[in-house]
Length: 418
Ligand code: FIX
Ligand code: ZN
Image 1 (cartoon, helix red, strand yellow):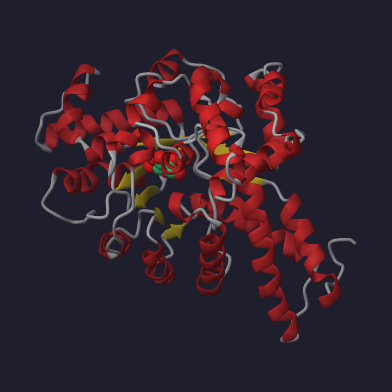
Image 2 (cartoon, rainbow, N blue to C red):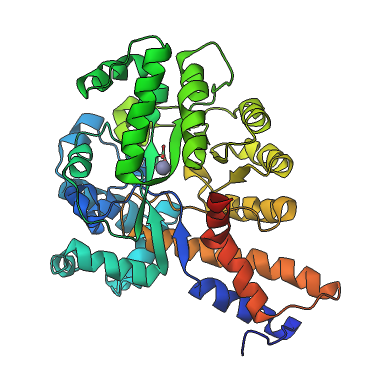
């Protein structure tokens, strides 16, 4: 079959599955790192098993105190999670299934349930070779990291300079500025930026200098922040002033989007540490509408955590071409919800959306997050194309490839270039 072959109802499903399965992905939000960041790049089966999604699950299945769990070594935690969630019950949750998918696609015989054998095999790999392997198996071409200049482990790597791996693009994370200004202004002063506690002219120009320097250093594709459901804009707060006077002008100057990830309630259960963040209510769309309407020269990338927000978010994106919505974030990254969201987004926005990002924290997870999504996307697209064929439309393989490319990162790149 060549690119011009006309698709019939008989060839549709197979063609779409094949195109979606083989298309390269540009993953626009992850917590993965270029190998130059050393231990910051997490990979391998013990990291997979101790993913914070699974930590939350093991605490429900096994009676164990938080302190007792956190005192264990990573290997012991992984052993406990394996035993509890994979051996003593079937691993049906999405996060558990993800581990099985990864091991299976990496070539392990998962029927054997032999964790020791997996560990032994993985010892033979170096991070660099493993990156190549995982990117190959997952057909992921490029990922966007989350880069935080305040992170004591990450900062020194940037400061000492290194040869970048083109496959790992950067995103500048600014939660420290927007979510905890009072705690972090002194840290900015230690770094040599003469900021005050108030957002006055001097502070604004020093924050802009900080953003300039880090933008030159890391070459981010966008600036990003995760926000709580009470996020309001504009409002009488330092955060609002920082957004208005520093973030928006900076993004305009460099022509890069401001990414807002809205809806997380941090540390609902602090004893769970990284697994302790939650979702307690939907958020308002008012700040997004205000930003998009009043700052047409700015571009906004938005994902929201609450299922209840998804419809209004799609409708808002219909109103503002400077708004690009992306991903099924975190507690939405489950097949039933992904399918519902992907259908709705295609129906309301056509192909001008990036329906998924992986949010991987462990390199191997690229395999399952994209494998599971590709299956859903193929189903949804097959239905949409079938409806078009029913209505008399003509479709070629080349056109399906073009559309899938847009959904798996191409439309994001077009948005960046706009
Ligand atoms: O704020 C974020 O970027 C979140 O995605 C993470 O903080 C979160 O812990 C996560 O890994 C969700 O998938
Ligand atoms: Zn994230």
